[in-house]
Every structure is written in structure tokens, then in C-alpha cells.
Length: 393
Figure 1 (cartoon, rainbow, N blue to C red):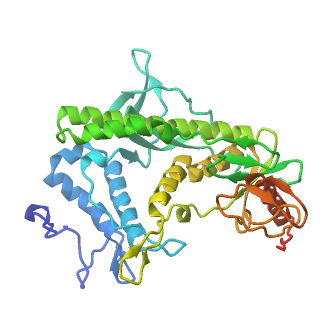
Figure 2 (cartoon, helix red, strand yellow):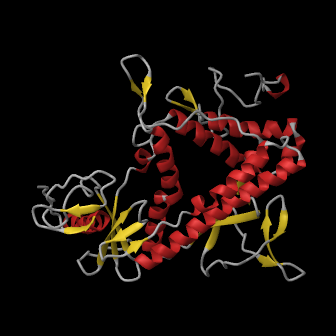
Figure 3 (cartoon, helix red, strand yellow):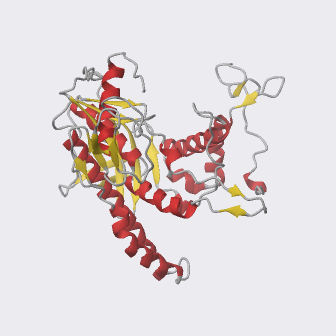
């Protein structure tokens, strides 16, 4: 990587010990060295002062905003180099231009409660920026203090996200004992978005699929325009607005569905799905002649698109949030065997994905396979919360 010579610091002006390591004012040696490795984040944070000297325009930015940028880069590098709890790392970080940087944060944003200006309009005071008018549609509750603030650029305008805290409010986790009457099991799918153990079938909304034709037309028009010119920017903005509309429609519908599902029960059982595995590509198959055999990836790509349109992961997060807000409970159960066993007698009834009806030869149960899975999920959840193990037949 080429680094211009004027950006390289020859000296940082700090006092050094006999080995050349920096010494802090308190006399602590090697403040940015741990286990023989330099904490690169501390070097970058110290470099901000020199950066402001070389580039005066950085002086107009708040120091904590610049420090937050350094910490974001450090987090990205840590995710790339250090494995998570599952032993996996993120992809290699890529350089992104200024047009891809859509937010900045104030880690310590005190006294940021919106106030009215001389014209009677609500404004928020952002350091180094000043009073910024805003639509104050959600007042900050009494007793809460603003801790941090993040300014976010969306396609339809700018938003500010406050993190608030009230230490007097206790953090409580709902400990509700599930019973057959106060709980229900939910099976998620693509033929029916959700099927509950009380017999309710919820259809798939397909927000992306309904807008897919319009989106493809806009993308075809975009491909014919010259990049970065005014017509290209106009169409690109229309595409971004359409994606935003689809995402907002989906999230709004999921919140309404979550409140509806919790309206008559206190506990919901749901499968603990490995969502990354559901959209994984099919493995390549190599024939005897050295050529690749058909593996069904073209059909799987359409299935993956429907899975991503359903956004089951987002819906589970919405369910967890609504459960916390209502003081109710959501319990995840092991999904193993929920589609291949009878809910009544636990007998294994093998079915392919195309078979939509469950017929048990042992106990005679006849019902929709998704409804059977929902009943089985509830049964497994009740047994697990009571400390009992389920025994498959």
C-alpha cells in the first residue's frame, strides 16, 4: 500500500524509556503494548492530533466522533482476525469511500435533550455542528438520560438515534412457567409464514416478490445510464427508496404479527433455526468425466430469495423484543425432528419437502404437516421447561 510521505509520522513527540517505548505522564511504561503486541487502536487515537495538524478540515469535527471512527475500524479488523464463539471470522475488510459512510456517533452525548428554538421548533444541540431542527415524534421519557447519539443518513433524510438510560429502572426477566393454556408453538415456513399450535395459518406477505418486477425495471434503466451523472443518480435514488419501502413494510408487518401472536398467550415456543445453513449454496458434484453434474442450485437460488424475503431472523428478534416489552417469554427449542415426527405418539414419519400432509400409521393422526410441527414444537417446549427429555420412537 502506498502511503504519501507527508502522512507518515517520523516522531510522535512523546517521552521514551531506554527501549524506546512511550511513557505516560503517570509513569506507566508501555501503555499500548500487551503481550508483546502494540495495541494499534491506541496508536491511531494518538495520531488524530497529528492528523488535525496536517489536515485542518478535521478540526471542524468533534474529537469523539473521530475516535469512534477509529474504534469502528478496530472492531472490523478484530472481527476479521479473531474468531467468534462459533470459531468463525468475518470477511476481509474492504476500503469504502465517503459515500458509503452513512452514520457518525457521539459516544458521550450529554445534554442532548431536544429544546425549542426561537421559532418554536424542536432542535437538538450536536457538538461542533450546533442546533439541528428535528421532528420530535417520540419524547424521551422522564427520568432517562441520553448516553450516546448516532446520526444516520437514510435515503429519505437524516435520523438521530439516542441511547437512553435510567439506572433506577430494574432489569427484569420474565420467569413465566409455561402451561398448555398460556403457551403456543409456532412453525415458520414459506408456504405459510407461521402456523400456530392453536390452528392459525398466517400467509406469507412476499413484500419483495410483489415489488420485484418494478425493481428489475429500474435496475435495467440504471444499467443504461452513465455512472455518477444526474440521470444515474436519480434512478439510483429511486431504487434505494424502493428497497427502503420493502424493508419498512416487512418490519411493520412483523411487529403487528408479533403483538397479535402474544395477544392471547404469555409464552411462545419457536425453533432455534440455523438460518445461515438455510441459504447456503448447494455443494458442487463432479462426475466421472470430470464435468460438474446438476446440483439444483438454480432452484435453490429462488428458494434463497424467498427465505431472505421472509426475514425469519429479523422476525425472531422482533418476537424477542415484543416479549420483553410485554413482560412475556419466548423459548427456543431444538428443531431436530420437528418435521419428521408425529406430535401425538412421537413416531417417525419420513416426508419429503413436497409432501404437505402428515399421516401417522401408528396413532392415525391426519393433519397438515406444518400444523403437526407447531403442535410438536409446543410439546417439546413444555417438556424441556419442565426438565424432561423427549424420547423419539
